[in-house]
Length: 76
Image 1 (cartoon, rainbow, N blue to C red):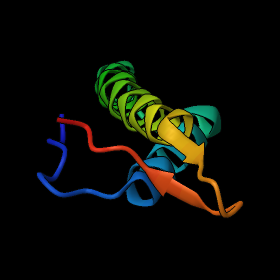
Image 2 (cartoon, one colour):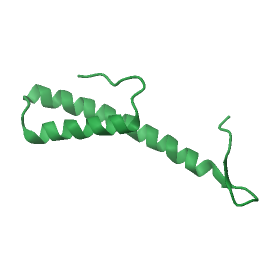
Image 3 (cartoon, rainbow, N blue to C red):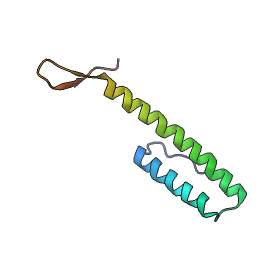
Image 4 (spheres, one colour):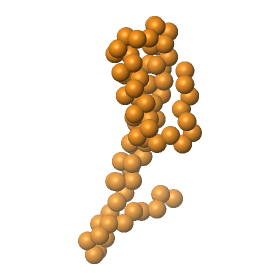
């Protein structure tokens, strides 16, 4: 199974996931390859989900200030 790069962006992970899905749907791989692709895909999904949850949390922390603008609370 290919390992996820340390600083892989959300977009890179999503692109790789799309590639894996296309490979699996094409039927071009062996059963073993398909299982490896599935395993890698599940890891990518987990990583993307964590990043989305983190982004969602940041958005929720945006608060409207008195001038009608927005500010981000410190996460400390």
